[in-house]
Image 1 (cartoon, helix red, strand yellow):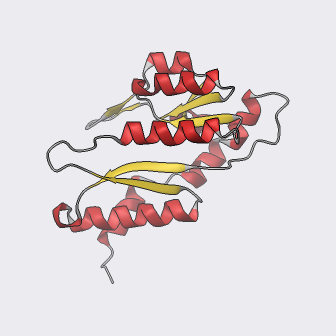
Image 2 (cartoon, helix red, strand yellow):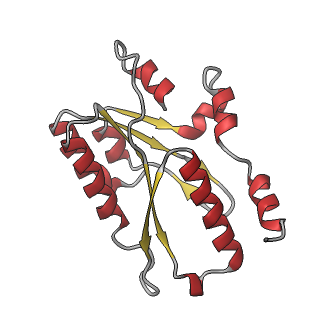
Image 3 (cartoon, rainbow, N blue to C red):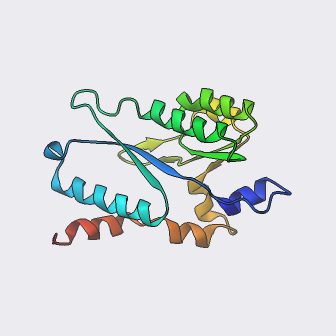
Length: 173
């Protein structure tokens, strides 16, 4: 993202990530399947190794992920208002973050919305048009896979689905 931002923000060549967090709802351990627990643990280790702070919120048994958007918005706005960042990168396509985007920009923080757009056999992902229009910049991360300038970096960052299957097939210790 640092390299992508350098291409968009001319004259600001020294952008560095100063804080990153991953927000996710988690099931009670007693309700989760063993393979999901293993994947969650692998994700946690990957996040910690990448310097990303995990922010897990217990999920309701009946309502699923509730309150994660609000938690992410409050945390992001707090970091933005502390005057420690010039730009916030929101990795989401959710239109509920339009007010956060506008509040950050009102306080002098530029916003890049990074999202994954795809249409697969079992699921679909897209970015809300209002969120794209509200932000200073937006990028479909999947488009970087075929961008000559970012192709090599893209391949080193993202694991193939087959890699996750190999992890699930390994016996647990």
